[in-house]
Image (tube, rainbow, N blue to C red):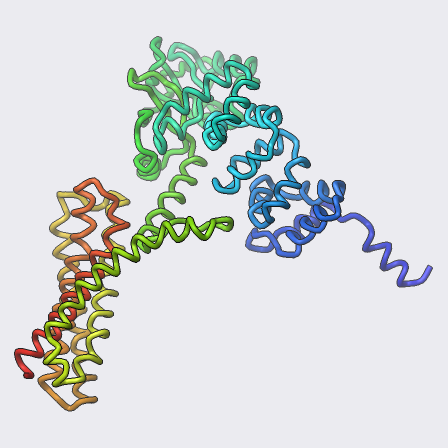
Length: 473
């Protein structure tokens, strides 16, 4: 056999799972473009065996990521190759927009089986994304107990603990011993959540009175009463906002926490894996809001992106039009000294950057609950001091540059004072605007940048032109 034939035979041999995994993922755990192309080619050829081989090397989260790279038509072709168990793992990992599209192409009976394999919180999210007609079909195909659990979860408000929690919990009466608890859990193992960290100790009214970490349970003697080793718990009410839940988890370093209803009864639990997603989601929202945009995912439509961005741009256009009225009021002064027209955008720009710095720090502090009425004045005073110091430094540098270029000391003084004044105003706007908006119950991230931009442009122009009119002309 020739060497060329040997090489072709080697290439034709199927790759091992480890080799496929190396082919699929880079060192940063991101999907390789070559692997995505291989999957797309297998779909185009209708090669089901090769497709199953490729998908078997991926974690469900990677399959979800893969579907984001594929076209809508390719995703539709891929869906029939996913069994209900695999589909259940993937649906909870998909981006919302892609998941809604995928759900349209999954038969109701298959989807009902897949939802039955999911944890209650993920199942409720999927059902919530369904169109009304299909939701009715899927719910009708589900067992009554599972259907009732999902309906109860959907009755809670969006982005609350009730929607975030999973209803599967491990609870034990406070009079049990460690041995009784372990024996019961082994006997009823099929009824336990797939993953849990704490055993919640409840009183006769099913109200949590403590929790026993699984690690502590396994280290304790069988005759030890649960009430003796249980630890205090941070109860979370079903109507608490998910951002507040994330704050509690972060502050107290929680792995899980019980969720209680209005009567204080245990109805579910929230685990840290859910909170990681919430923290990421809230952080992304704040970052995008600061720029006045929404999340433009891989499959976001052009019209949707335009609708999310255009209103803020129009508002900004209006505020800038108001700001430049200052220039119109000083047209005569600008005509006499062209240098003012050159320096105006510089004064405005450095003020805008200073305002963005203060704004970002303030919004982060509000989100992290590090800024409240008790320390607000101290934070404001600190930012104003920073604004004055930086304004003096930057104004001095720009004034020196203006003197070197135009050899006019009065112009240099005017520019330096304008920068100092504008950066002071920027510090005020950057820290006060988000505080005021937060006190008014509004999201401080979205409107604040426009307020700060308007203030720094308006007062930047006013300061430079006003001071120049006083000491130059």
